[in-house]
Length: 113
Image (cartoon, rainbow, N blue to C red):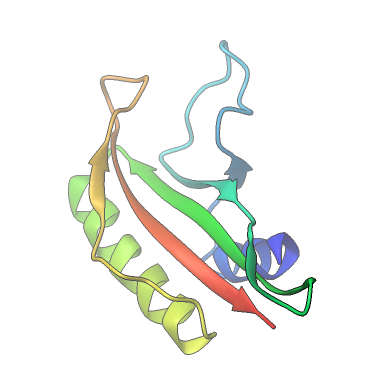
């Protein structure tokens, strides 16, 4: 599922990283995205057998241009929905380690059965 998500995110033409994987001395790109897998629990159990997986990810968009953060996150959300990802909100603010950048994120889910 992670490969599917990365492919979708990379289609926007910005760098994509696993959240927290940039080295402390790396310069932030002007705009970039990160992702983090929060959890991957079984969806249900029948007759003592697991059924399906709920993939739970956060997607983060960072940019030095606040307008890009909001517009890119909206575009990402629309494409994820087209690809059967569940996107239950329009996002939330996240902290940035650089004063030049702001960040927003989405919590998303995919039900694999």
